[in-house]
Image 1: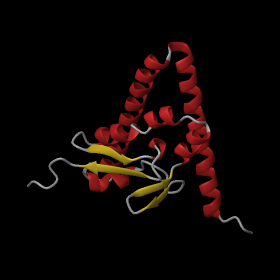
Image 2: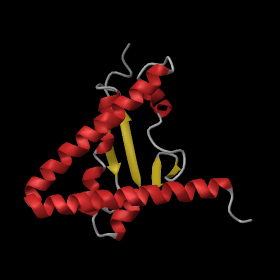
Image 3: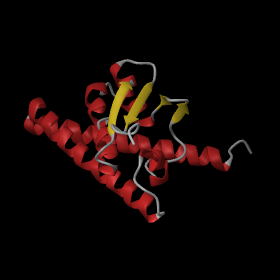
Image 4: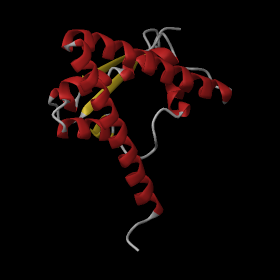
Length: 156
């Protein structure tokens, strides 16, 4: 009554995303306290790049296990993100549960470093891909736009 299975799944994804965002928040806060902001920024960037690369490699393995090539048009087959939890409209991400949590914690600068997971995961998936954040809510935009390009996609 009132709660459908989809509502429960959406709520579950939001709970898990909030928990992971808080974990990231606490980890980064402790790294800053231990080594200072400058060194913390270097470490966080390194950690996020390695994590994102692992995510991209996992997506690649999944796509290849389906007998497909690791091309941009097949990335969606790689099980990168849950099918619920983020609000998408055309090429815009209107809601990200991580960004929502970090904004509530006044942690935009450090949360924004996490977003570089996108560049790392696409390059881990296929080293020829380049990913850009054309807009990001953690930079003050109203929504996020992630653009991914294959440099030679128009050449034969």
